[in-house]
Length: 238
Image (cartoon, rainbow, N blue to C red; front, side):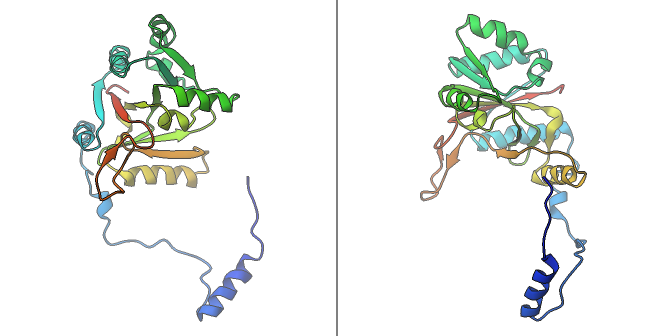
C-alpha cells in the first residue's frame, strides 16, 4: 500500500531551525574507506563455506547432515526417526516435491503412523493448533549464513512462522547454493530486492539453531522458548 506524507518539509525545516542548522533535503550515502564486513570469508568457495557452517553448528548445539537430492528422503527419515516421529508440520511449499520428498511424506509416513500437517492459509487457528502439538517442524532456508550458522526463513501466507518455533524439534533444509559468508550478504540481497520494488516476505526470521538464552549470569540454557533440538540438512546439489 502506497501512502502520502503531508507537510514533511515544513516539519523538518522547523526541527532544523530549532537545532540552528540548515535543513538537509538530499542525503547522499557515504563512501566508506574501510569495509571490513566485506572481507570476512570473501574468497571462500561453497565447499569452504560449508566447512565453516559445519564447525559453527558445534557451537550452536545444532546437528548437521550433508546429503544430496537422491539420498535426502532416507536421511530426512533417519532424523525424523531419531526425533521420535509422531507428528510433523511443514510449509505448503512445492520445493518439498522438487526435492523428491513427496512419496516419503504422503505414503511412507502414514504407514508409520506419522501424522503430517501442511500449512493452510485458510485455516489460521488450526495452523497454530497443529504447530503447537507437532513434534517436528520442517522448513527451508532461503539464505544461510556460514559464519554464525544462521538459517534465514521467509514467511508468507503458505509459510507460517509458527512452523519454525512452536514444534518441539526443528529441521531446516538448506540448499547448498544458499550458503553465504555472513549477515552482510543477506542484508545486501534483501536490500537489493527492496530497491528493485520486488515483493519480499512479510516476515524474515534469522534462526541460529535451537532456542537458547544466557540472560541469567551468562549461563547458556538451550531449549527455553522454542525448539529444544535442531538439525540442518544441507542438500549439496541444490
